[in-house]
Amino acid sequence: MSKIDSFLARRRIAYFSMEIALSPAIHTYSGGLGVLAGDVARSCADLDLPVVFVTLLSESGYLRQEIDAAGRQVEHADPWNPAQHAVPLEAMVAVEIEGRRVWIRPWLYVLTCPLGNTVPVILLDTDIQQNAESDRLLTDRLYGGDLAYRIKQEIVLGIGGERILRALGFTIFKYHLNEGHAAFLALSLLKSYRRRTNTWGGSLLYEVDPVRDLCIFTTHTPVEAGHDRFPYDLVQGTLGDFIELEQLKLLAGEQELNMTRLALNLSGFVNGVARRHSETAQRMFPGYTIRAITNGVHAPTWTHPKFAEKFEAAAPGWSHEPEILARIDELPDEPIWAAHAAAKHELVAKVAELTGAAMDPERPILAFARRMTGYKRPDLLFTDLGELTRIAAERPFQIVMAGKAHPNDAEGKRLIEVVHRHIGALEGKVAVAFLPNYDFALARYLVAGADIWLNTPMPPLEASGTSGMKAAINGVLNFSVLDGWWVEACTEGVTGWAIGKDHETGSDSAAELYEKLGNTVLPLWYDDRPRWIWMMKQSISKIGSYFNTQRMMRRYATEAYLG
Ligand SMILES: *Cc1c(COP(=O)(O)O)cnc(C)c1O
Image (cartoon, rainbow, N blue to C red; front, side, top):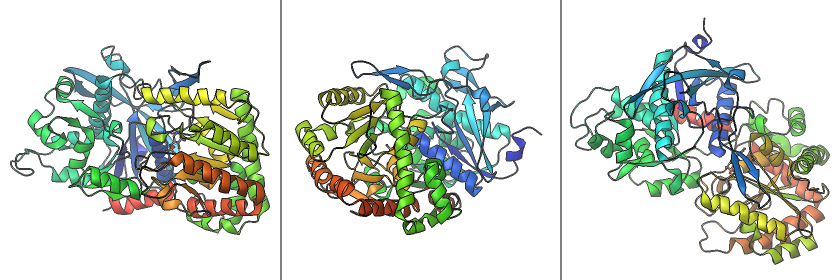
């Protein structure tokens, strides 16, 4: 029996994602979307949900970031070795791209959870001898290249992935499109249904309803650039006559092919990733019903081992059933503070190793780590260096930052330079370290070892955010603008703090940040340690028990997959 056969007996949900963070050594992810998909897979294994995951092999990874002497991002390939982690399967399928046949070979990665349950992950690879030289590179670099490269990758993922599952013998009863990148999957399903006339929109020649019954679409961002759009001449040049242009325009937009629009029209269940995000998405896409399933994180993956030890003693079985973290607020202060001190010590050592900076563990560390891009405002904290210095002179604190910018995001790259100029200007006044190459492994140090987790997006552009959930479960207190998941999780002075008020527009976030940092957050850290530790426990119990992928996947299972 081949390795794949053991996965064929159960009918499965197919989860399609451009990226998925399976382990730190497997570079098939860029950031939040992929880490979420990985946490989803880990929870599916825990819960024994019958899912098969489909993604690209991304053999050269996304990007390995270096920062040069001038504070600029330098981009390198970030390869990994599939043969060390996965096995190539016998099946091969082809898709047509630019009139050429492009062969795709699947690799199988088996994700095993501590209980021994497994879920299969299919990694699509076009680096095959039969393919033209340029086609061999289609699954090489995640989000690499230009628009043409992107649409080809999405053809491989959506159409190639759908065909591979059939070729391997899977029986699929639902397809989950994780973000619009996977929308060609729905188009591929549409093609397999018999034509009939006048069923939808007056002139569509395909049976849409059976496809809508099969497809679930999760949209992940209200940011325009996050929605793939392709001009129709590019679509015709790559997809050829896969589907008639007039038909495609009815499904994906008149002016250009909008992958989100395509996914919306072909999915019977559509959701955003937090309540606030689903409201925003509902306004962006009137006429569709956009539900809300708020994101979570895989609790055992993101809990520092020292905290895991304490949790196991107080709430046995918490990693499988994070709901029972609700009782963590009964723990005494001492073990909580000791676990935090251990995690902080490791972060301080990591900062020294990577940058040479010496952080003082006896002073609070404020962390800001996320993709470097305009709407996340990594420079907001540095709006008034004089004010920042004054606050630090009164009650010293240290700042640790990290984050990559997408290679085509000029603004994000500029912000990395700007932040580095501020770091230089603050030398001798406020200790700030920028850690290069923010990834899965580095995130684990940061979300456990900081004291305060800062987030300053421009509302309503942060769909959810998940790093704050990882921090919260380690007793790191969130200090964040009210957007995304934080709208649901913030109880002021209990689970963390809000920067500014909800639904406030045109407010001065920087002034509010400084005011609360200087007058509330730092005084509490220095002057009322018992109350700080009480808040750490509130954060773990109230946030950790709810904002996890175990709860999230139970909701997808009952509302979307079985609905
Ligand atoms: C969790 C995580 C993210 C996403 O964090 P946000 O809060 O959504 O910005 C990005 N990158 C890495 C490496 C992560 O672990």
